[in-house]
Amino acid sequence: MELVGWTNDRLVAERIQRLPKDEWVYSVPNASIVMAAFLHVAPNGMRFNGGDLGAWYAADDLRTAAAEVGHHLRREVVARGVKDMSRTYRCYTAALHGDYLDVRGAQSRHPEAYDSTSYSTSQVFGERVRAGGDPGIIYDSLRRTFGVNVAAFRPRNIRDVRQTDHFEITVSAAERRIDVRKLSR
Image (cartoon, rainbow, N blue to C red; front, side, top):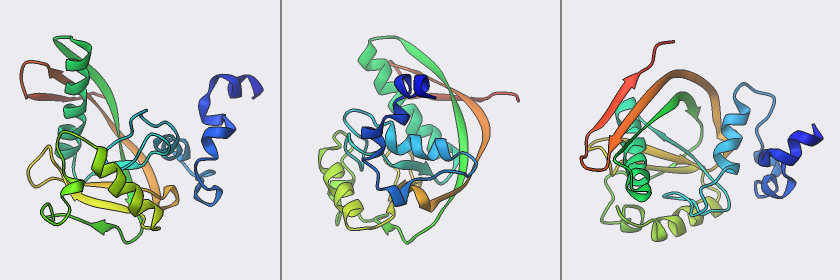
């Protein structure tokens, strides 16, 4: 266990202390998946969280999730200067509990949540919502018309997490198409 602690930053005390102890999820199926969303944070954060503490991001359906994932994969393709890229992703379902701040259809009232090129103002907005005790934010997808996304800030509100299928997503730097292929079990 000690050796794993040296090589697995999920077990590093400093990182886990970023999350209040009463928010920790353990002793339930896929607890490590939930905790990873909060503890393995992109250095510059995501739409509604900074680089210190993550959030659980989800979509209302598979097409919206693929559009969101494909968008970020394409950004990586461009940043790396490669022609295209394929990655395999696991799909999870979960029940989200709580009364989430709903900013769907409110782009004019919450422009800070909907910048399509920068997360600087949406991160401030999201962290303010988190600090206020809200469980998260429901918002319109910027990558798929009529798609709905959620950013959940409270790990304990993410329940009944189940792995479903695996998908391969392929994108190209030169075109907007996102190819999604369900992989056989």
